[in-house]
Length: 276
Image (cartoon, rainbow, N blue to C red; front, side):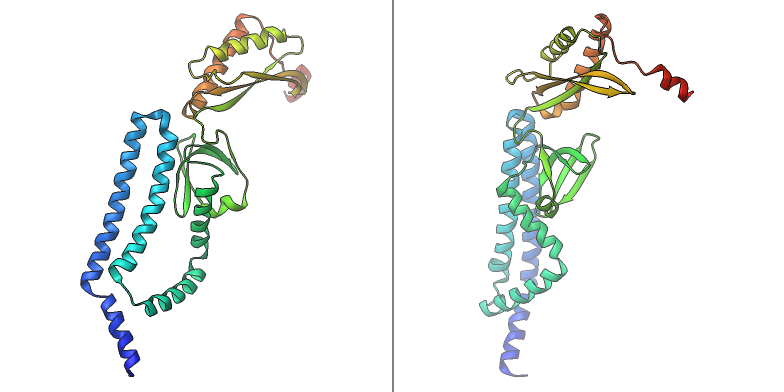
């Protein structure tokens, strides 16, 4: 072997020194433990200050990104301390190898950085992505985790959010619009029906009254018969109460409709007879 090859082998053997390997393992463990401690602290802080939940989640996500990137740089440059020539050579080779083997992961990591700064949605937002609807609980280096209303945790690669449509219901705010549809017969008293719905909404313990309650009335077809649709648009004070708020309104409006004899759409008798 020539002298250059021997020097390269000696430099490589220094990188595999037991002490350096031990320090790398210790540093990786420290990074993970510190991040886990940050996550637990954030959860405790959110329980104590629920009104700042979104800000705490977004701050902890940014700190996690910076922590892992800074930690990886420190482990390579501070602990391994490879020669500049080797660093450039290994970096180029690793970039090519990783580019082919982990192109999807690399795309997700780059997409994660784009999501962090472009912010089409934020941690805590209620979003619809394809057939999935729920709350963003974390934005990681590789994927976004979304908790559905059925308490399922869905993991979606970051790269999919760059090329597909996603809608955010609250866009970083605690409150969010909730739409409830009610149907009444054509001959029902529409003014009374709308008044009863408004009463149920503004007296709900979950309503956010700093934003307006609005209505849209339209004719629709239900069971082959015309009916009147009253669409109520109002805001819940916290996205966590979305379904509780919706259920509260529907239950109380149904009871008020019965008490005030508000006629509901009936199925066509001819349709029922044919079906039998």
